[in-house]
Amino acid sequence: MIHPKGLYTLFFTELWERFSYYGMRAILVLFMVTPVTQGGLGFDIKSATALYGTYTMSVYFTSLPGGFIADKFLGARYSVLIGGIIIACGHFTMIFHSIEFFYVGLILISVGTGLLKPNISTMVGSLYEKNDARRDSGFSVFYMGINIGAVLAPLVCGYLAQSESFKQFLISNGINPISCWHFGFGAAGVGMIFGLIVYILKQNNFPEIKRSSDKSQTNQKEQLTSDEWKKTGAIFIFFLFTMLFWAAYEQKGASLNLFALKLVETKIFNWEFPSSWLQSLTAFFVIGLSPIFSKLWMRLGEKQPSSPAKFSIGLLFIGLAYALMVPAASFTALGKISPLWLVGLYFLEVVGEMCLSPVGLSTVTKLAPQKLLGIMMGVWFLASAIGNKFAGFLGGFFIAEDPSQLMMLYGGISIGLLVASLVLTLLIPKIKKLMGEVK
Ligand code: GLN
Image (tube, rainbow, N blue to C red; front, top):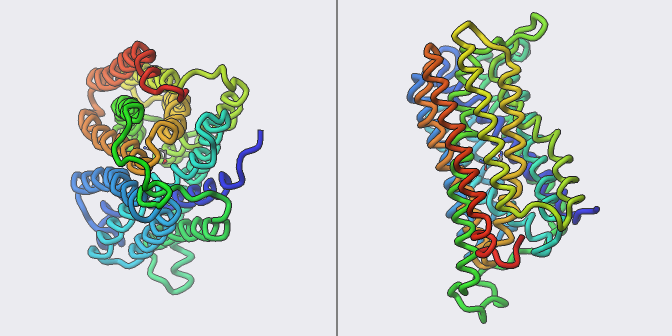
């Protein structure tokens, strides 16, 4: 089945935006903890991770005002454009080695992402009629773009910021090698410029989403109808369960990052690789699984599970993923374990992600009242913001030297998510009622 042309424009714009986000994020903490003499900021680990947590939360939190601004004033199309420009300014600000520029850069990227991220997602939804069977499939394709950016960026920005060969290249060109970090940040910014170029050149490929102030909407009542209230209620139920999903999932950047560093054998055929490379696995699996899920939803057509059923399958899989970490944690008592445990965990997690994250984007665009589309997408990303912060909190229970504590941590997460999946399954009939004609 063929997707609207606009999907591919949004796919490439978001690919490059995520390239800039994940590229910068991959080297952010490393830059903060690197001593000043080596070009970093010389922060201690606690301050660096706290700032990192606040930054990742802010990036998603700003989706709420970003969606509101699109609904009320700018419209989605201009919000994405202005957001992209602000993000690029943020990355380029970080080319300069100064703490003030560093903070201004982080603020600009958060503000810009707030304008871009929720609104580009609503634009994908606007390409399809409400019950178009291609919609979930379209969001799976869009989600693949996100993850192509997420796989490539850490490799490129990480190479510029950390590799010896790039430092040598700088020296041979008469440039101080400790400025390598800023080349990494600059490369992230170049990604956003590519995204903007694609977006500006191809912006006629999609319809504008109406703002609540548009003339055609003025004869609509400002207040929500009871049907709209019910659908908004369904979004809030999804919001609560999604928060739990991300709190578990984002252990990747929190406790699982430390787990990989301290407890996993990071060697293949005697070749030692950086533990942080394991972070690319999720995006890699998303790319592999997206076409499969996209086809699956298309093939099932009308027979595909409802969105709440897909959500509970998502929670089930992430619950199973963490169940795998219980024996893995117990084996750490005997020494470092195989990276295959994390490969298995991330694979199951991504199966869950495919049932929940792109489906969630799609469902929000179907359920949200037209006049609140942007802000409801902001609510969806608010679940990511809170989930990220909660993930950091749970990660605080990580003690590498205590396998039984680790078993409790991951076993607890697993049980929590499995129970959440069960509760959501029981709520499916109620949620379906709230969703009305939306599947
Ligand atoms: N990985 C997806 C992205 O980067 C979803 C992130 C999220 O909602 N927490 O867009």
